[in-house]
Length: 219
Image (tube, rainbow, N blue to C red):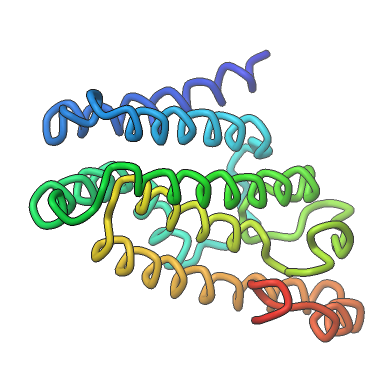
């Protein structure tokens, strides 16, 4: 019960109150657009589910702190700013060029990416904490969605980020954000795989040869 309350508070503060504080002062009209409201509603649902699924552990001394962890935390914390920038970009440059129904494409992409992300998180189970560490009785997950990508959480996250940016009708800013996220993800993946290779040896090397790093069947 205590963990459930802590997770609920994390969602409420980080994914609901914090973004809406930005929206209220910078892009208040976001609440008057039906496509934007649908996008935000889906965002809340997905990240509530993600917070609930993700294991919540006490801080451990054996967890490895990397600069890319700090950058990822900064990206999450600053996401409301980028959301506002997406809307301001559209309002300033593309309001006469892009029909509001364009958001539908982005919403569909966000749903696809979210399904991949949540499915990946569920299949990892208690190993999905996101911390750079080997847990007690750690297992190498190679089945299900992990048969096609070694890092489907990041893959799903990239699609969801792209989808949300397009749902908010951004064209320029979202390209920058996707490139930045991709760079950070690849750097963190490299560090994670070093740790897994040290722990699982030949089993992990074999797994690397049989599947793709990020994008199924491609990369």
